[in-house]
Image (cartoon, rainbow, N blue to C red; front, top):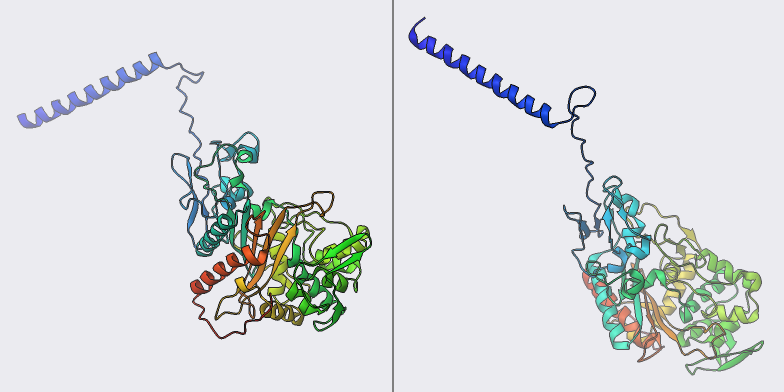
Length: 468
């Protein structure tokens, strides 16, 4: 062995000895500083649970509406867009379950889809809503402008896809930004989803559904005529009309003039059980209209409590309180050729459980009349639009005689001949006018105009009726 080889051997031996000495010193240090369990070895560190971020909420086209950052903070990139529908979350995430720890569920800071879909979101599952961001924007901008112009306390606008029941837009005013809530939900009325969480009376929009019930039951035809003075007595109640009209009206003219007297007279041709039976088929009594979401239950009388006065009231939209969502879904039945389709807000919708309420020809005849006599402020030159106005007097609890509170409504189809969507607009306590034809119809028209342009539907020659 030469000298170089000897040096390499000694160097390697030295390194091995040094490594062994360091290892011994390190182990001794550990043994001095760490308590030993019975086994004589230190316990390994307990792994911390890894919780995936809370699931995201998206619009139908993938637009993010609610996301979680790595810090755990919840952000709402689109601000006020569908704010009340999305809702918001406030609280600390439990590291094991992924749920939000709050002190009292809704009051503590959860609402909308954030609350309704908590189970899926807590497990990091994403949620896709049926909302179309473009249509939602159109509805919100038109509604906010209309609420401000009318001085209404609040308003809501719903755009429902006719065939599927998808809620393409659910707009509310005032606006709400989930990223900047003020206090608890109970202290911030802007968080209220008025489409789901308020009850209104349908008012004259109900006349279209009553007319459909009469036609379906074979109790009337559109050209049937009844005596229609400007007022009539039913038991101890006086029913009045607002718009002056001829003393005899056909069923079509009753809709054109929105005659309470005429509609209540026609309604005497069917009994309470028949009319309320149609209401039930239209799910106007349904207390679970949108499973998982907070939707108020309607207030109504069972048929055995409906006398002649109550029957008259029901025929033109009094004596029954429903959410705007209930009314939109019921009115959509006329758009869908007589088939009721339930509203849907979460994808995938799948095949809806539908129910035929009216014959196709009944629904089409109603749409033709509502198009011919559409309110002037709901018309759009070159397009076939149709619908029904409503002015709903809000009962004081002792009746309607002393009430000065009204809701203005418009329910319509876009387009009327072959509807693609049903649109409902509600303004609560408008100050400039109580009539839906004045304050709600223009909002419908703006939503319809922007939707048709968005879809690329060109104008065509249509016949515009002369009625109000």
